[in-house]
Image (cartoon, rainbow, N blue to C red; front, side, top):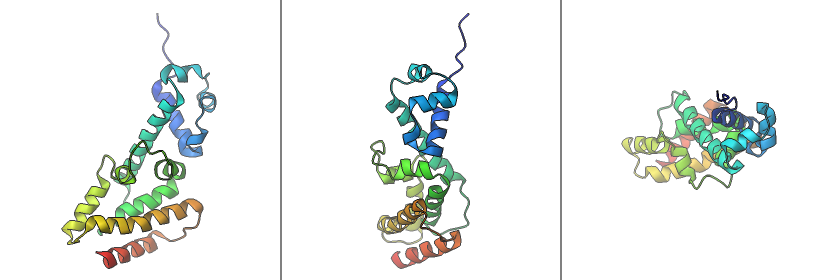
Length: 181
């Protein structure tokens, strides 16, 4: 009778993802991962031919994490782009290391920032369409103007320099939207 595998691909990936989520992607090494799981490095390299293969899957799981965060984030804001901005800024606060991996690293899996934000749920596309439906003449241009501010806020969150409340952030984003639309 064949021995049942105790260290599955899901176990490896989920543990690696959690390490990346808490300590950053740079903390995901074969030895640290094996120690966290309680095994040697052999099961890791039985499943993954190299660490880059695992990093790619961690990255995809992080992309899905942002999409799930977007979908579940609650706000009462109707103005286009503000909900997405609040999601992004709060994700920077709540998921610091994943935010860094997705939005502040040089390696994005050959995706643009737009593609990452839009994700599987079409977040940016939805917001651009909402702005167009609200009468905005250049919703893509407006998105770019607002995004520069939103990304700056999220980066300030990362450095500990952002102390505005959600209400204050919403008010600022509303002002930008009104002044640029």
